Length: 344
Image (cartoon, rainbow, N blue to C red; front, side, top):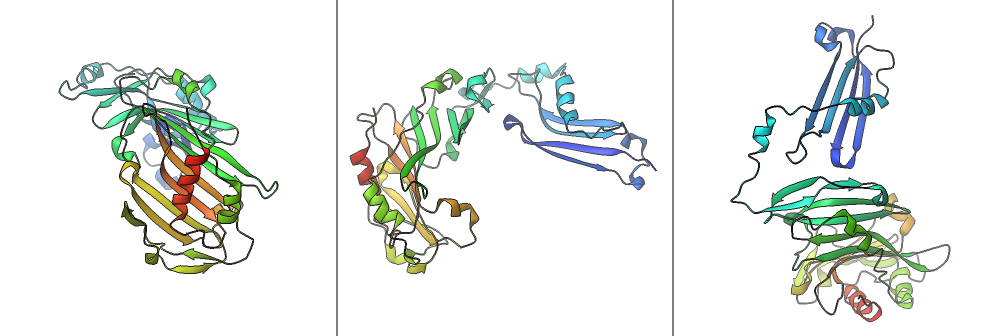
């Protein structure tokens, strides 16, 4: 007996064009209802600032045409789809509440900044959000996003606008024996209407190139190659302190024959609050094996502050030197960064 092919395409986040495809032949006992044979179900969202465009969440196709489950059918459907808003215009006219100040930000995702344009504007309450331009780097590829950032989603307190956040990794190459700095992402934040125009992306720095003394990196992160090192262990949560040294006794020293991972985060760099955590990575943690020795540094640069300097938000150290998880290692990193890096 011939039955119906069900083809499902769902979008985890329409703005990022990330979709999931699923297809199968329906069992014969589901064919009693003739409506199950030939139909398309479309679920999407329409924003008031762009009412003729629909962002799709899910498409379900019940079909009996040959090869109708070809994944390309979803692209064809999207290209053929038109929207008639009809009486919805009346609803859209009521979306603005004059009692709540609005912050308008451009809102688009770009897989390539060079070929990207953005005319979509999204308003949100000004006391809950600000505008950003974000660039994430994966090897030779850069992904970009312009949009809103909720005040609650920031890892630390933002004291001033505009600002730039950067995360860079200082990596040791087993092949060359050298330490290299690689930029992971750069984010620009501002708090006035339409301040995240995509044309500003070209002015974002490609890198801060944060550097540390290689002699210090070799002795404090790389180590001498011994198979076992001391690593403080506090795997269940961080130890925090304000304007005082972290008590390392709260994280007992254990022997570690893999990589020691050490975190230090700053809730608000201006207040000196920092939280320390350290533990020995399990030997089956494949994600960390290719980069056994590295430091990831994330910080914020306030553009109106003079002299300009990067305030650290988080430092993650993947190390195999003995006692590389000592809480004082973060003070050493801060001191070395201040002495070796200058930003104009």
